[in-house]
Image (cartoon, rainbow, N blue to C red; front, side):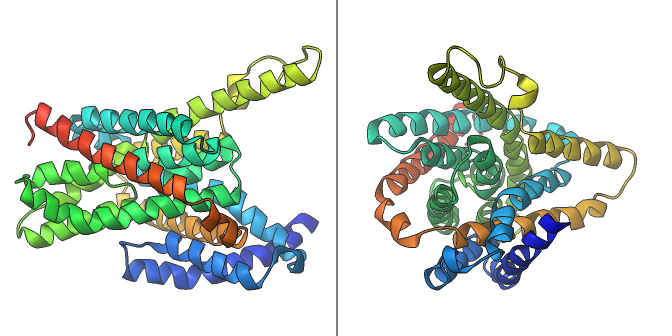
Length: 350
């Protein structure tokens, strides 16, 4: 109970910041609530430094870590695996190619630019899978610092906005079909809100089109890549820590030998369980709308967590180290878009 009393004030602060940012995100989906929240948190942190926060900081730290994990778990209730299998299967080759492209390019840039490994990983995963949600799932696994998360989110946001603004016009210039643009938006735009914004703009430009539904299904299919990616990263982190322990001791391993159970993040397992629950319930006749409140709560938790991360971020330090991450984000973004178009052309879809 004492611990609960310590964290409640900080959670309340993050919630208070999140509420107006949530509504701003609803009004401007191309930006989104998480970005407004992280910017608001960083602005407040300029005036309200950590040493003066007292016990409130405990709740802010709890929100940045634990509430972020709860958001990922609840995200699973928005995934109907049966629907994804039925509708999203044809997009799998394109999804696989864009994810592989982003991860390979990200690794090369990490080496060439000599970037911080955590920032490079977050940008590569955020670009390849689903923006903020993928970063939220990956950050605890690789033990990323709040400033690293903030930097990755900022980079992803920049290219989300650019994609949402220019991709509908680009698709028209390339003569893409409605289905083709749905695939393009779902695989080449990072965050769900920006995918929605780009596809909705396309539908507005092409009366009768239904690219939004196609793009949404493709995006949900792409989101499932969170599971294998985080598992691989967890295994790599565990082995890295084992190796470090071996070097620091006389051969005693940190985990007493590699353990998949210990390496696999519990919240990712619960995310998968939530997806299975949704799938089984809908197959049994439950209305998919039943899970809508949980999906909404997941989105709000992400906004809260981004507010907390913003409060824990040194804006001056973030600006000083921003050139390389932005360059990496730009190259990953361009390569993903090119890979999506190339695969569609190869498969005869465009």
